[in-house]
Image (cartoon, rainbow, N blue to C red):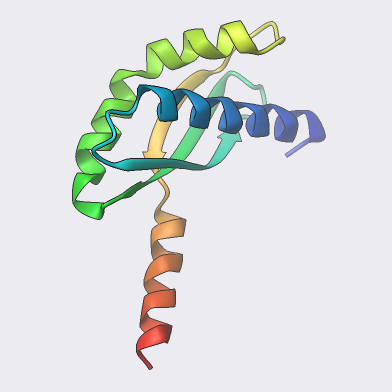
Length: 107
């Protein structure tokens, strides 16, 4: 990623975390772990983790329903011409890392 893409991804990550923290109903903890942007900056993917794991599906549905409001929040808080379209996904890499840590602790 270019430096500009990286800065934009970090800003989206931080603002998404603020928004989801504010809008969350407190039945689960939603953490924004990363954000990636397309080279043309028209699309961004926000990666989240959810605790407890059994609430993951509901939290992902909640976050996807709030994408429009999140985009409006980004428009108000970012000084860029084009706000990327957002996708929200569970961070599988983080889940795999946690599983490996758990397995290592068992030994």
